[in-house]
Image (tube, rainbow over all chains, first blue to last red):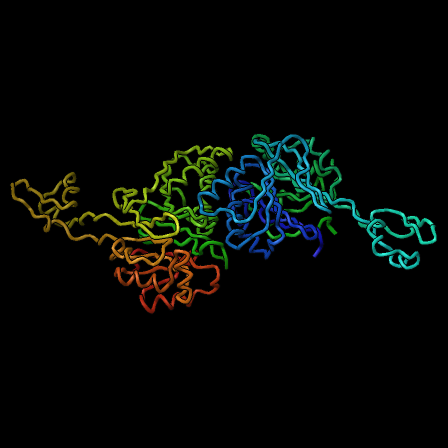
Length: 307
Length: 307
């Protein structure tokens, strides 16, 4: 399996329908796992698709509409019942903290593992978390209530060592990390060996942007410019554009317009209204504007970037 | 379909597993519907089994363990999104009220239909609700935290009119209800016609008792004596009786012992530990004590009484 993958756990909006679940996505990046939104039933979906939770240490909640967080306390409770010990970080609207704490008290489910809650400020772009290889920013979205998208951007990767040069120039093991970071090497003779002779380019750094829920908003283009994969909500078809505007949602066509303007690699649409049993017309509509569009569907796994 | 039926929506305990959902049951009695507990995913199960929610006006929550109530806010939210207008009554532990109110505020989901919350007192047997044809009592259970079972008992039914007697004795339409209630009839001649000449027995009044979660408790026998159908939790097999005791749960054998001592018509067991993928050994164990035992399984419909 690729190192950087996105699994769709729930693709529907508002009420569950047509065997589609409310919003949740599982993002795997090397050894780290991230859950993005957590609608009711997310833990069932993790079971169904045999997704391991051991490395799931970061959960991002976009906003306080129930179809994006009602599955959270159930998941936290199952972590407890499965004897989780290690820490969990939750990034969400400030109000979410009280809900987690209230239900820990009332359900006799005092969380026996440390939960660190990181409230969104909803003030522009914030760095929410980072580790050695990835950084997560918020993306300001325009919805009925405060709402953030999330941008998962790989950090620049270390350069690849050319093995034959190590021997040729007498590089020692402890010097390799500095060379991977781009440093030159001073040989025993005093000669400076340029980094270009020791390394080659590594693969580019890839990025995934998650944008749900949002009205059509051209300001978004600047935040998702050139990302490899963009998820953008597409609750309605264009013939319901008025309804989309009224409810601070987007149409499939509007999602594609953002993807095109931002020159992204691939667009995934989702968060479908329950009124659509079939989704082919939403896909067709988006592809007319942005051909490399795919539907979010439960269990579907996307490589980042798409190979 | 029979007038009085029980549909199992979720049969598992604690964490969902083996395609089994956390606890929820749907009880239909004539024109009324009742939801008993509401684990995560209950609304998906109502969809799956095509159960109409229009007459679902009463929800009973036994206790504050998440596998019995984490689906409630999702269901309430979907009622809202589906434009429910009419009132809903919720009977549960006092702490549940705050959770419902908190999430109504925080999710921008001010409930647009009236919700009446009726807190359990947990002091002996309480009448929780009644209508013309059924009365619901609490059943004191012994669990780790305060917990109630529920007894749904049909009220004595009106006697059946013997049509031929109406004409024979000149009974008028407006006098029929009093006769159905057991009254005699005074004919125009002044003659008193005994009720026994005007009516015949109606069917008995049936009862359903729901007991989850509870340790083995012989005090329970008095509360469920002679009910037509008893649901009693059976989280473990007998070889885990120590574990059952430690966790305030019961074994299948213990559930059957209660059913036998209370001389019930039928026993349904459920609330299985996730460690049991197959359930046949739990059923065998219970049937050795109480032969008319059935497994609660998702989607299974039981008539009350079993025909």
